[in-house]
Amino acid sequence: MQKIWVISHLSLSLQRKDKKKQEIMYSKIIETAQWLKAKMPCCPDTVIILGTGLGRLSEEISVTLTIDYAEIPNFPVSTVEGHSGRLILGKLGNKNILAMQGRFHYYEGYSMKEVTFPIRVMYELGVKTLFVSNAAGGTNPAFEIGDIMIITDHINFFPEHPLRGKNFPTGPRFPDMHEVYDHELIQQADAIAAEKGIKVQHGVYLGTQGPTFETPAEYRMFRVLGADAVGMSTVPEVIVAHHCGIRVFGVSVITDLGVDGKIIEVSHEEVQEAANAVQPLMAEIMREMINRS
Ligand code: HPA
Image (cartoon, rainbow, N blue to C red; front, side, top):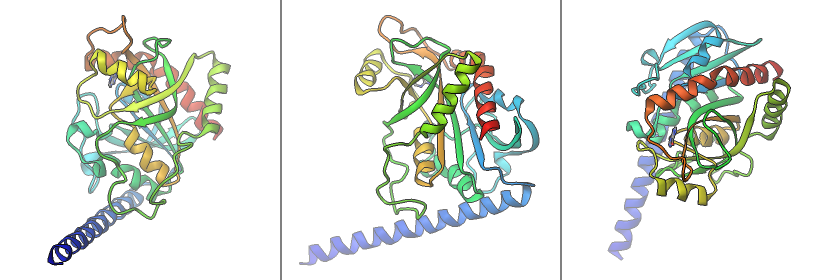
């Protein structure tokens, strides 16, 4: 009897702690959003996360304002080489957008709550659409280095779920995931790519924690699981965005191949280089999508 009382008491106290943690996080999200609102002349409804090697897409933006992550209250600070860590407000094509140059990776040691914190802030700012880009290793044998893969679906292979804990009222406790990557945005990207003669692939992105690239056996396993590409980001932010009702469009640049017979040594620098080379094409698709939105 006493054992039951102790267990239920413990679980009640855990629930209370969880609630308290969430209240603290929510007040931080609001504080950050209010701080940003006060700085920004307008709140765009589209945000782009510029992934590894794609940070230079920001050169396509006519910049109104840049804010270093380090200045933003409660924002984690990006540490990985090649990510400068700043928020950019400006015009891409004919629309105002926000761009996150640099993101927070789980492998850097951030918690899932920290990795996805900026998305919750974006939701509070009124963002309705998220464009997300990343570099990824191709596991689909039909892929080549430098291919642009439109993400049609994902596999969450992270060891911790970003929605774990007391549910945020932005969405249901058990969110439906049947269409996370907006099919209209995918169709639009396909049409633009066809018009401009840009080759695009489609596929499933598997997000894993890193920081190691995969062994040949791991690439094989991910292929068997249904992945066309594998990377170390995106899935946590996309899950939270989806839970907030934000439309998502995602693209991967295939920077190396995890395909039997084609696996060679891979380094972060090579990944960045391969992604850099594809940047103008990615920019063209995204600019046009934003123009037409
Ligand atoms: N694996 C994981 N993450 C990556 C890869 C890869 O092969 N390429 C770029 N990011």
